[in-house]
Length: 454
Image 1 (cartoon, rainbow, N blue to C red):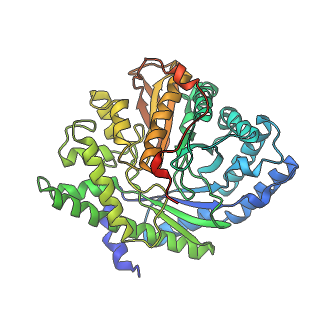
Image 2: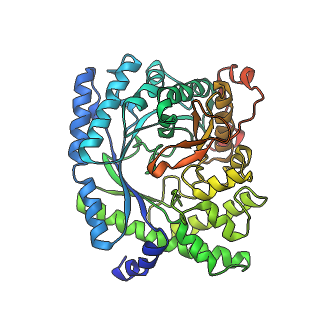
Image 3: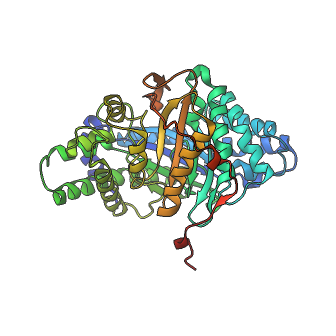
């Protein structure tokens, strides 16, 4: 049982160490909204979202008042729209209309993001799914709160290189559509390998087809809490370091479990999972990179960073799984550049490169996240970076993702401003050697041998 004493124990974490529940995400199935008539689909989608989610924001605010726990975001994830619109959407323009409907519904219920403008194409891509993918640049430009994701690979199926090639072009088009806002549209687009069905974090959240009609998922955070805890064991051995992180993760996750159970009870919607991820913000003291520094690294990116991240990720999971019956989503340490002041500092100091970030993704829970690159980067180069990251996920049987932002009109060293939780980021250099002939081969990279487990 979770009691008020455990909540009181976290007061200092909340007041001084940036502890928060990063998001309550309400997953809603839209499978019953499918129809051959686009107008009917749009009405069904709007009606279902505004009915099921009408109390989400009020419930979150009520829990904040009752327990004093900050809940930063209230969000919605929906069934991948390529499935919902398959019968009614005959062109990319039709999918843009659904994106507008999602945006209107999100505004009506007051959430800051709605995820699920998505397609799952890890093995092949139908014309319908291609239409959704080609609609993404315009859809993200004409909406404020819609987030998009495309799953292009998995350990079981391999990597759909046709989709990878197309996404390189789509990311550049999305950047161009929103170039007046430092190509902000790309901050709402994630390319996945092994995408989970129950991820509460944006921009990659969608409500998987294996889920029930509606479900409450919660994402916790607390890099500042972990950093403060490590300050008390400065210079201690690795065993002490690990035990401290594990115990801290347990306490953080218990807060998330409380919020999830309360939200589920008040809304009469099943509790799904707790995502254990440590998610940073641009706020000082709420940084994954500062945890590395407290461990003994001069900057994130210094030799030893990958080992430090592996340790952190593992201990967060070990502590978290003891605190919640249902753990899912991504669960671990996020390493976005723009949303972490310590990571930004490391890039500006020359300690952190794109290649080092890629190495770090081998042991963390996500991938290349919120990284600004020059706006004149070739589509094939972006596809090559995606392919590399998808290969890491495929071979290591883990979720990996790419959220690159080619900032139109800016080059290495300049700053891109995204605002709010998305923060800002220095434009990072990209390897200029060509991979075009490799990307243009087309087809599918087959699944690795260890995927055959039947």
